Image (cartoon, rainbow, N blue to C red):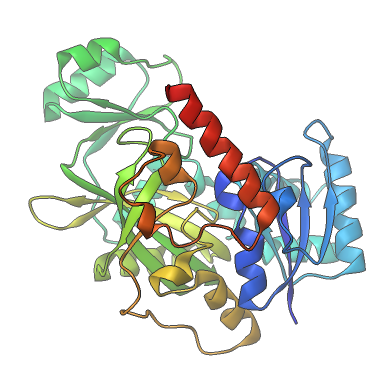
Length: 367
């Protein structure tokens, strides 16, 4: 049975159910994470170790090597952005470090081509790649000052989106709808920002997984409800059958020789129904663990790719709409979408208890 090492270096909500999904797909799981985090509570790990948030990189590496020596893994799965950055760093310093060759080969087989690391953090580079592959993107401009932002708005008009060139999960994204929004905008001058024409429509995503540059499966979805606000994470998603999004995800994987989970982001223009590329996340997103509930198990697709089995196909009879637990109940403890929560972790009781406590704390704060 193939084994994966899941590396988690943040207490990220979206990672908590990843070991369970990978385990149920057929993998054995080794887990390296911080203590007292949601993912540390999972029962779906065959072997595990912990490192501390203030541990130097050398200690994290020591713990990782110990797990790999005891139980060799086929891939390392970064469960969050910090874990991804750590693995990328290992490859970047490998030429001058004395890492075991087996470790370097394993990390290389778990990530995209090193030249493609930038696409997960540099929105301009990712957009240039996708437009070069023939996919549309909103009109955009690099800006370093409020003066340049005002000049861009004079060209394209309101509304516009302003975002830091590097960043994930909607951090720092601002939608400027009018002059008042412009006056309230916050831009750190002399740092790299992108101003982008606002496309009226619905945000969408493509949760995907690839091996050796071949996209194994893509679940395209609309971000039906996001929280907090329009730029926040998804709490309710609706499955989409948009061929162009599938083609875009496959093209990205091929261009970057991708390995592992990734998620290109799009916006579906309201007037035309056409997708526009926005950015890409280079790790699993929260829809990956429960993706089988919407008819396409992405962890199962990775397992099939690893063992050489036929890839799973989309079950069109599966529910099209899913609410995420606990994200939707963070938004509204009395959510009308409660019946659409398809993956509440009753089978992972310590995680479930911790998530329930979080919902209670947030609900109490609203009183």
